[in-house]
Image 1 (cartoon, rainbow, N blue to C red):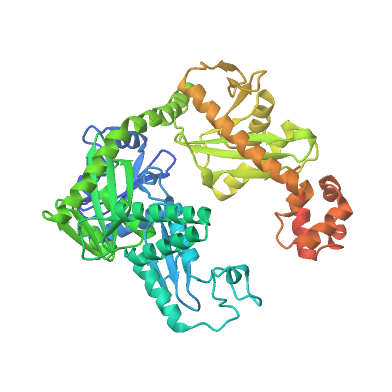
Image 2: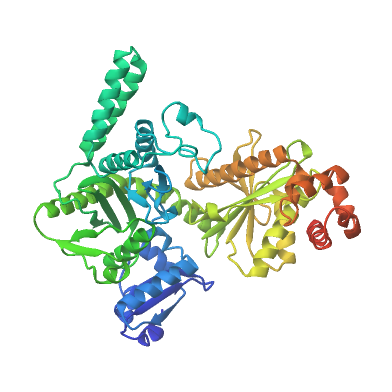
Length: 586
């Protein structure tokens, strides 16, 4: 297929880019030897996700680098720029919660995601915690035991927390610095793993409440004590040098990589992260990329322990920490535990993963075959909502390779003032795809409208006008308002087998676009239709909006107004913007 082009690829380090028939980059990789790596995709039998990717490759390009490290940096930058569909599988997009202790100007605790934390000298960071609930529970407990500042800013009057003895009145009172130092020492000691002082305080409080016959409060304290004991018991491991480190293990089988990262902070296991993803390139290359993106969003510890056979050469140039290859001793037991967890996770989840792929990617492929489409990577679905003949809106949801892509969802405030599905569809399709054509952005392979022949005709009329060749079909409901048939582009009816994957896939998509549009419709109804239209115009705030609504009363009347009419309520340039916006679509 690429014999002549492959013969010209140099045996040098670099980054390669796989492209589909539309020239879109679908995968970016890096290699120590470009010729060997790129050729390997085409000179052997591939399986799993790699086979699926190779089936879509229509061309490849590459950038030669001076080293493998430089190639890796190019790879990361290209992935950020193009967001290729097969690299998305390796991404980690979750940032774990931490507890921040802020000492100045006043002592305060808060729960923060790592990406939102800006490190300063007066902040100390503890975690990560396995979930935000655990972190918040600890912060709430410490706030009840110690009189820390709980409000934001500086208030003129003493707040409720001061009057219930949970604050020292930092906004108004002079605070004893020695007492503050004592509070800080005890809190930091607890967050570093020493729970003795806090447990003693809680036990004393529980006895005091019991003595005063306040058994309800005593029971609350007892539950908090039990929670602390459980947390501390779960955190204990064999290492006692108090170094912040992560333990990394992985397991590979049946075309999938399973990873496990343990977080050890101050000698205690405070959380873990498990991830399973399909092998696309080479095991070490895929792990390099996964760990590089992971530590771009998470705290980098003082050291990371890895299996003895794991190649860390590239990562050491990217992640500013020490990688230690472990082959024996207590640390090896932790590596083995991470590997064992990776293996168990993959064995437990693989059947579910494969079933999910069959129900999503498999159903997507069945739909592509059914419609005889060359590719089906992206589907745009539209639904209109005009309950009671007012506040017409439309929603668009996007599915990519069988999965919803929520970042691509769009809402449309319909400008026509009548219950007219045909013209609503024309307006929304024109707004959406004239923009796509103007900006040369990603086109769908299929458009699905929530309705029958009329919506398909309206959609095709605009696409023909824009000279866009995109397949359109419609989902027709039965008398119980449930998905029933597929109306094809030529308006013929394809009866669906209600037990098939394709039917369930189409139903899921139809339910999603309907949910999204109805939720938006409710929001619009609560705000008022004119008000919502005006939200899209920069320079129109609440006061100007109110004047326009009071004077015109409806979108139809506002569309009839001249620039001079609008200029009575708005500055000239904003009046022109509103005038052009209202007349953009007929």
